[in-house]
Image (cartoon, rainbow, N blue to C red):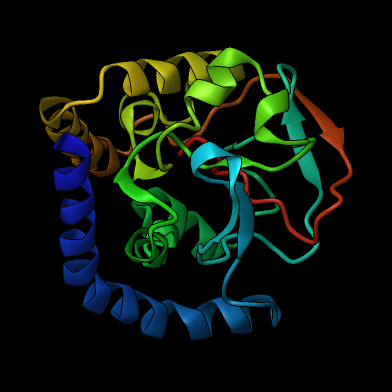
Length: 216
């Protein structure tokens, strides 16, 4: 019953958000394009429910052909003065407006409004090849926001993010989702844990652009 209500809620929220998504795109698409004459959207391949790969829609916040930079623990770097992020990109990330196109993913059924973060497909060789914890976090649709994004954003390590995702899957409930919604609003307004500055290790990217808001 909860899953039915959750999906119904996703559809209703997505339809309500659609006019705002269009408005955000209309306003920021020209700015993004004329910043460096690159694509407006960053259609990133991500792992969905049970490991199904889908394209996650985001407004591009980084310069074209930016290199991939990793933290010492292997997580994605996200620093306040990251030179790869455009000026408009910094604003989009602080306000989370770059995530708005993902309501289209929610409407399509690729994602949920609340759930574990949609993870990269790097080194992915199939659902059955993943360990138990990584499989568990893929048993539900990934979310625009979620337990980890709301309470920790970019302050958690890669291992901690997995633990947080698993915690959400094991404790899914209407009450928890409501708490996550309110905490997300509070975190965005307070701009908590948007950036982290741990030791980083540079690494060339195989993609034309690597978005670094993986845990936002």
